[in-house]
Image 1 (cartoon, rainbow, N blue to C red):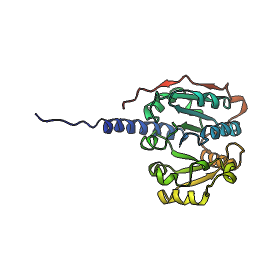
Image 2 (tube, rainbow, N blue to C red):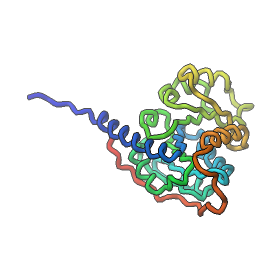
Image 3 (cartoon, helix red, strand yellow):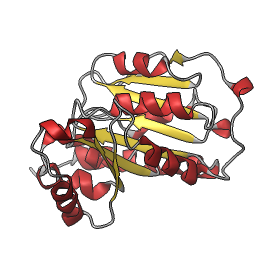
Image 4 (cartoon, helix red, strand yellow):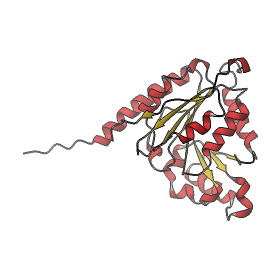
Length: 244
């Protein structure tokens, strides 16, 4: 009797990639900049989003899809700083978001009014590297407390990314971290990377990040007005049921 082997993961990835292409087509058709923020736990990406929403909220229409393993704590934090939708996705233990979850979350977002969609992925530098969510680009948030060789330890994530935010630079006087060495390691893995040096806590370097967002959304649609802002809210968590 012959045995037929079915590669379940391959089929799941094929379905994910097809959904990601559909997401990307929807966002590109509306001129939405979609950034998939990926990092290790504790890199400061939630605080980076809070500062971005607070400081650019009067200029850009922004929405957030935030993923967490068990809670919607990050979504609740972020919702304090935006009048736009914060859609929480609780993965129920899964170590990444997938394109189906993003597709479901987009149903609650007015894409025609949007400048930027942030996707805050689960804190993990392994799993999210393999899953296309339909984003314009992946952004690795990489804190100075993690060591310069992080790009060499997790090369696939840095290969898949287009931008790196080196965060928590306010701690540089207190930790043995060489920024230039870290950048060199990252460029060794991916020579096309672009860098931002920031402290989301103090605000140092954030203007460069903001200028990037302004430039990438310029002309996509008129700048927002204060009158168009709604009340901040966190969307109801969407439970994960993706095939694994």
